[in-house]
Image 1 (cartoon, rainbow, N blue to C red):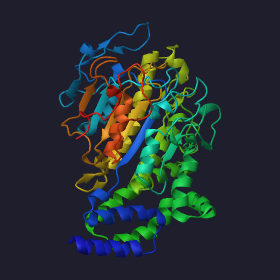
Image 2: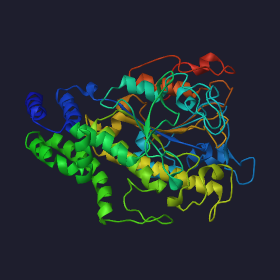
Image 3: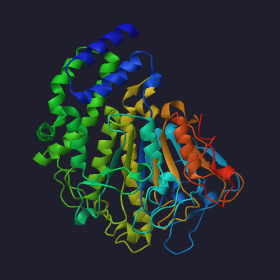
Image 4: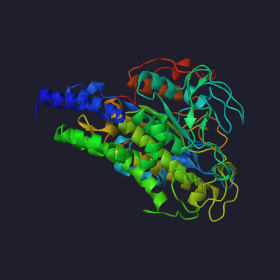
Length: 477
């Protein structure tokens, strides 16, 4: 079918009376039909955990003996040895570490970054806005003020959509009372003193994103939420299926699959496909459950559907907080206690941290699977998306910020350096020649999004400025 004929069909379909929720999908397909692949947006999903991301646990099998060493105290995780020079290793011949193994099907899209520092931020339990903004703020219990925009806030302005930024979080001590409302976790900002809001309730996030976008009326959104959004859209979908060509019809099928998981969760309320998690209370509906793992899974489902639907190009998930107790994973100790190596029934603190990290990475893998299933351009949506996994506490529970690990998954429209089997990058240790900072990574992401800059945030005054400027040439194509 010619581009012109395809465009005409899509234009007719877009002109039809369909749910506004389908319009971003149609507009994206129209752009591709017109040969405007450049118009297809780049997308970002930031996943921010608390209590540090253990560097030694990200080292590929076969390299761990050489690049890790025992921790300083009994019961603490192994440590990463600082590198003297850049280590750039293909992951093709290396098995991923245990907690990252769910990402094995996506190794060609995987990059593991170690050795970056962020000492322009505060250390301790959280760097707050500084983790994605590169500045010092806050205290142990208070996020302080946003001294500038964070990287997700800048990307939201650079990649506009219906919802410029979508934030999803767990709003407090989940098993002792969740704050089911809009909250400000203190990690994202659109500008100076302009923090970005997050939705603490998966149910409310679903309603606000999908119900409101589909109807434009709050009352109808409430009714539609109860009767299921997907059922309400069936008539619109049937209209489109008869008007768009086969390749785009396949995209529509995948688009709808993103909402199937949302519908299936609601059906659990009626007793269909009911599940009981081991070591957790009975779950009726993950969207209204007080089980932390259920709520986190629901947030990741919402994130995937949001990106696929085109409602937003920038989503940030605050995956947990220090107050969370992962009873859904059989862990009877809150994250704060685990960070201090307190005893956990049935496992060591290191094993508990690994179980939590594995669970979070599995949620990332589930989003990657959904994105990879959606054709886009010459590849899939995963090829045009980047998932960034980090901690707001750098490398450990009381982060020193001398080492700040990142896991990157996705293609970002060919803007990242191509590798077969993935890439492991470990930059020289703090203060050594060739050392780089997290600001250089954020410069790289902004450059890939078409917003290049030489400086991001504030400088670490103990490092040469040249080590903190520009992008990571090893990362970009």
